[in-house]
Image 1: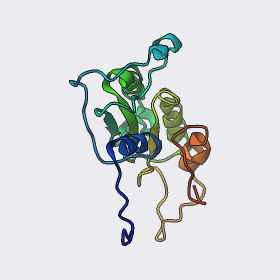
Image 2: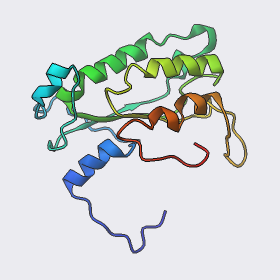
Image 3: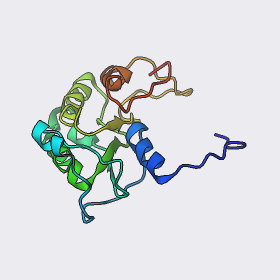
Length: 174
């Protein structure tokens, strides 16, 4: 991607707002020891916590390969469900802006593994904005990377995220 002629400068507030609206990957900032973010009193009464766009401190949760949790007959989604419950519970305190999965959700990419993973990710859906990246274990690869229909795309494609405020679109092939 060329940046020639495009030297727009982002200030801190714009960057924080972008962290909520644009899927992030690869970086982690921990704010667990930091002073708590400004709380939204309505958040506790509604049972939902919120991200504070005004705070200079925030966290991005990064989730690496979960493939061994979704591996045919030895699947065990319980640790991931617990992780998601923790992220949702700590969202306001740690000011968690976004959670991104880095790929290899499942071991074999079968319909059963993908379905179990998709169901497990519902634990966090609507509580913390997130993205899930397909890894080489989740889809059949091809030389031109045009993957087409797959169990992964059916479960984690644009239709899953379309109602989320962080969703801004997808490529024509999902």
